[in-house]
Image (cartoon, rainbow, N blue to C red; front, side):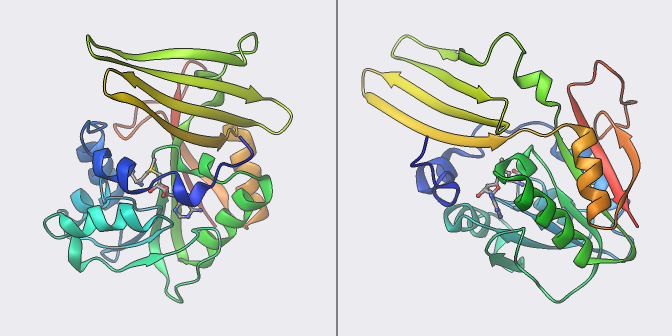
Length: 243
Ligand SMILES: C[S@@+](CC[C@H](N)C(=O)[O-])C[C@H]1O[C@@H](n2cnc3c(N)ncnc32)[C@H](O)[C@@H]1O
């Protein structure tokens, strides 16, 4: 997908529908993160529509954000309490806010939205630059093998089957670049829509090395916000990095 532009993947159409089907981990995630925002402040990389940030604000935390897509921030602004958050439009691997936080966090597989190892490492470095001395960087993301099987690099997943439309995920994974190209295709009597996205899949071990390059070490790894232990069968992880 050579024409794919990450800045356009979350445009007005995607942003308008983004919160239609809540992921369901917002209350647990916000409670977990609130315990790490020790001075009552936090910075969310890729804050999006505030799906996680606004519940965290509900715990009394001041949440600032960095976000690439203006359309996602417009949705955030339209929600109760969303207009008052301090959000900077830009790339989370590069924007420098000149402020330190006890908690920087990046959730919902979004480390994968950076498409080169260099950008992912730069993201860790930027998180470290925004941390207080004892601050932590929290990443919540999938395990690559939960998405891509060794014998199945090109596949079509069936998302929804309706009478008037179907939604398919058309995917191709390149193990050399670690890029998973996806197109969420909706075929219906009203027409066809395409929502392409490309992700760079990285393992927990690779993330730990990126952390080390940024001067951070893994403090704890869990399977989810409810502190389920991380095991060989976990499909996702919540990883906490500190100095
Ligand atoms: C899956 S959504 C997650 C949004 C929000 N964190 C949540 O949990 O709902 C991914 C978000 O990452 C944003 N994004 C992608 N690349 C980015 C980058 N380099 N810098 C900042 N935001 C980015 C997208 O615009 C989108 O809003």
